[in-house]
Length: 157
Image (cartoon, rainbow, N blue to C red; front, side):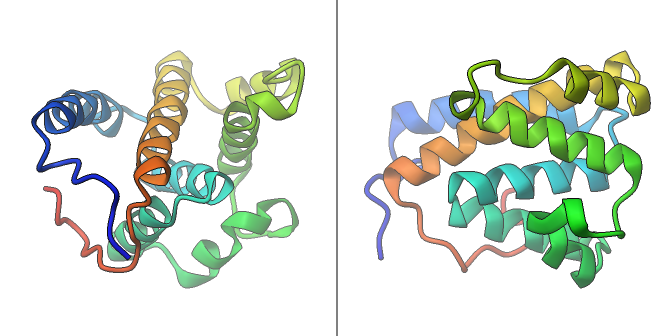
């Protein structure tokens, strides 16, 4: 399987990727815990069917010390006891923020209030930004059918 378009070989796509990666740096430098950031990226990528991002973020999380038990249970987080209440709130916000078209009301007030119970305003800003960012990455990779499986932790810097 080959990607339909080489995002880094095309001048316009590479320029766009440079800017979107800069936006990602703002989130990665935030006070939102790194483990939560990876869980959010994994969950949104699973929902969107983005194999490339699911591969990347599970490998990055494992490389950073995340356990295989937690990684294997991200898709079933509601039934898993291995996530903190703060992580669960972030995962709920991620699901609702990713599945906007599936629910007429978008993100519920309850999901927002629960996330706000565990995250301060700066972390909420980072969380909202991260959900938007990973959804953009997912869409790019799904559209071009970016193949998954070859990613090596840290390969993009």
